[in-house]
Image 1 (cartoon, helix red, strand yellow):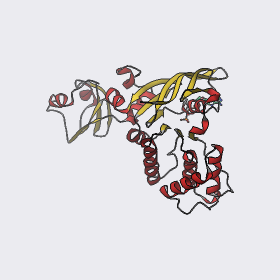
Image 2 (cartoon, protein in one colour; image 1 turned 120 degrees about the vertical axis):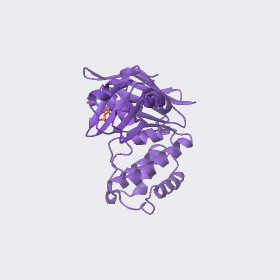
Image 3 (cartoon, rainbow, N blue to C red; image 1 turned 60 degrees about the vertical axis):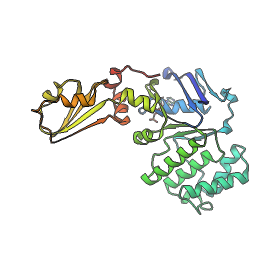
Image 4 (cartoon, rainbow, N blue to C red; image 1 turned 135 degrees about the vertical axis):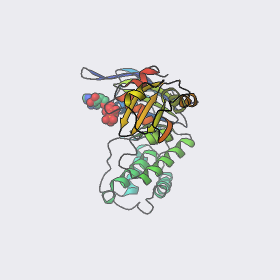
Length: 310
Ligand SMILES: Nc1ncnc2c1ncn2[C@@H]1O[C@H](COP(=O)(O)OP(=O)(O)OP(=O)(O)O)[C@@H](O)[C@H]1O
């Protein structure tokens, strides 16, 4: 797959605190790559280094063979975490201004603006002043501003925050469509369900360091162990004593049994003792959300299968 962006060993300190400790990953043309991590992990700092808002102390960022200040930034689109548009300007004028910053032709920009305003449910709003828009509407306009110039790389920092579920679906659809048309997308989000649905690969960062890097399928295969949920009255000690159980969480008569990495689900089910009280039972893979929480809270799951994945 063709690399659009390459981040190599970037390190960054603020005063004496090192917040990026050697971050490396690639983003390929036509893929959606997630950058995930707990609050303060270093996601936005990584993105700001890619965008040239600041420069790394060590390491480098390469975009289509260009480094540092030579990077052609007009080929990159960026939706920052901090939202904000000029207030007393019409929607179309804001969008044309964004396009002009990237030297994108005005007539083409107008067409694209009208197209995306319609796609995002803002048809007819082109002459409305930005201050009359709701927060979600403003976010949609800012999103259009980040893609108006047909960027080859699109960086989205928390694009779904503050959007209602319908708007989230619309964004999700548009982002996928852009990737299908060849845009390389780097997406930072805390909405694990959306990341799980949308992204091809992910990079998870914790305390400025890589903890997971790989395709969504590989990460799930490697990290998403099985868990068994049982409804019934059972002693925690009994459940903890069952083979292949690494951890039990119990709330009322619901018990969740986390199983070891290599467990064969069908064999494991066959050996359950008849004495267990089972009113309901299900076996599922742990979600990306649970993988994330375990890593963020330094629990055992990541350590069990090796701390990193290249
Ligand atoms: N300009 C700055 N000066 C000093 N420290 C900073 C600066 N920007 C970020 N930091 C620190 O760097 C660390 C990483 O912050 P960053 O904003 O990259 O995290 P994040 O992963 O994007 O978090 P969040 O999910 O909360 O947005 C934090 O400890 C933060 O306090």
